[in-house]
Image 1 (tube, protein in one colour):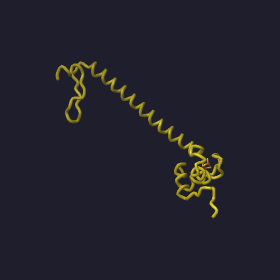
Image 2 (cartoon, rainbow, N blue to C red):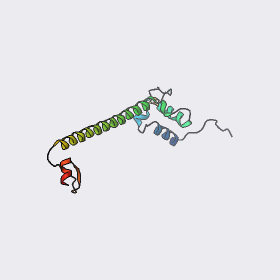
Image 3 (cartoon, rainbow, N blue to C red):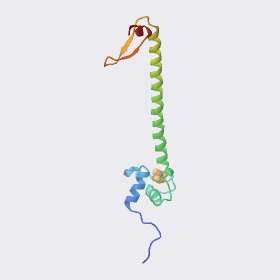
Image 4 (tube, rainbow, N blue to C red):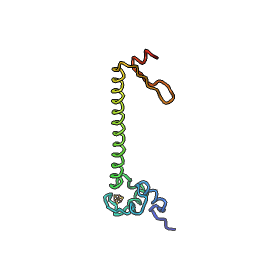
Length: 124
Ligand code: SF4
């Protein structure tokens, strides 16, 4: 009996390869731009399933990954900026608290002292 030297791929293999490419629907699986060297996304998925290409070589995936990474970095930068603003606001409040001649004591909703100025310390 003749045995083919080519490995047989199942539809499940192709679906796994499409998943690695981040292509879950018909449109994504039929971009067929050819930038990876395969004429269709399906053929690229076949090559990935066969282990002769890698998802990184899909230009569309690379662009989407870069876009997502950029958005994540943007979010991280926004969080850092927000933390910096909060720190500056805390610093301004500390300066105002220390400058006021009146006792100023801040409580949390449970009645615990969370901050006070030097005049307030004398009262406590
Ligand atoms: S580069 Fe990506 S989108 Fe273009 S044909 Fe290859 S697998 Fe499809």
